[in-house]
Image (cartoon, rainbow, N blue to C red):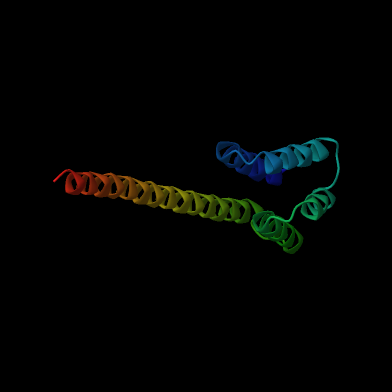
Length: 125
């Protein structure tokens, strides 16, 4: 049940990111594990239900490692870390974009008011 631990960690990250569809899928995966469905079958079904690239990578990495006898815990931790990093970068990009949009809007508003004042003074002279 090492995989459940990895999924639990990923679930925490996704909950923080408000990605409810994936969170619900992870709960479904966990429920399948609890009912005794094999790891392989559960993850393959999970993969079929999702088109997220990160989900595909997580499942592929987990299944390959499990079948080849690698260090599953390490692979899951690495994949989870990569997905978390990707989400963080995406958030940073969104934040930077929002900041630049706000900055541009403020400049437009400032220069728009300034132009209006200048025009108003010209008409008063």
